[in-house]
Length: 354
Ligand code: MRU
Image (cartoon, rainbow, N blue to C red; front, side):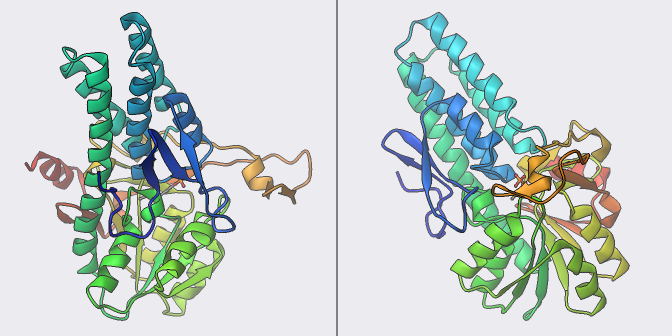
C-alpha cells in the first residue's frame, strides 16, 4: 500500500504495524514525533486534544478510528462487536463539533457498514481499513485539484496572507490553502506567504510557518493584529484560508480570527479566497448561524505550554472558530473549480454536479 501522502513531504497520518500513527501537532515545531493509535477511543482523544487537527485530517483520522475499532473487535461475538462499533462511532462523533468533515467521514464509514452487513466481521474490518486508506488517498487527490484551480488566481510574485494552518498537516497531504501555494510554486510562480500567528493555539506560527520553511517557500510570520497594517501599506495581494464548514448559503466557518481578516480584506479591496473541498460543504445548514462553534479550554487563552500570564479569577472566552458571511468571500476554491461570490443557488448547483 502506498502512502496517501506520497510525493508530499509531510505524512500527517500513516499506517504502520496495524496501527494509525499521527504526527503530534501539539509539540511541533519543537519536536517531531508520531503517536500510535489502536482503537476508536484513542483516536477520538487524539482529535479532542489536537494531536491531529484541521478539518480534512480529522475526517481521515476518524475513518481510521472506525477501522481500528472493527479490527480490535473482529474476533468478538456479534453483540459485543456491534456494541463496540456503535461506541466507536459515538466517541468519534463527540470529539470535536465544528469541522463537518468528521461527520462526513463517519457517515461514509457507517453507510459502508450498513450496506455490507453480509460480510464476516473479519472481512468487514479489513474492508473498512481499505476504505479509510481510500478516503485519505482521495483527500490528497482533491487537494491537488484545488491547488491547481487556486494557483490560477495567484499572479507571479503574489504576497498571500493565510490564517491558521490549512496545510498538509491539516489534511492527508498537500493541504487546501497551503496546497494552493504548493501548486503555484510547482507551476513556477514565485509567491510569498504571510502567516498569521493564530492565537491562541498558534497553528500559524507553529505549523504553517514550519511547513513553508520545510519547503523553502518564503514565509513571514506576523501576529494576528498586524494584518490590517500590512494590508493598508499595500503589502498583501490576496488572502487564502481553509474552512471547517461552509453552510448552504456560502457562509464560512474557520479558525477564530478569520472573520476579522475577511473584513479587513474587503476594506482594502483584497480578494479573500477559501479553499474548500466539497466534503466541507454542509447543505443541511441554511446559513452560518447554525454552525456549532466549539468553545475550548480557558487555559489556551490564559497561557501557553505551562506558562500562565493572565491573573487567576479573570473571566475568559475561547470560541475556536468564527463565521465569515458569504458576501465577504471572493471565491470558494473547490476540487470542481472556483465558485465566485458563493450563494445558495451556486452551491446547490455545485453539489448537484456529478
Ligand atoms: O482548531 P483547528 O486547528 O482544527 O482548526 C483548523 C482550521 O480552522 C483550518 O483552517 C481548517 O480546518 C481548514 S484545514 C484544511
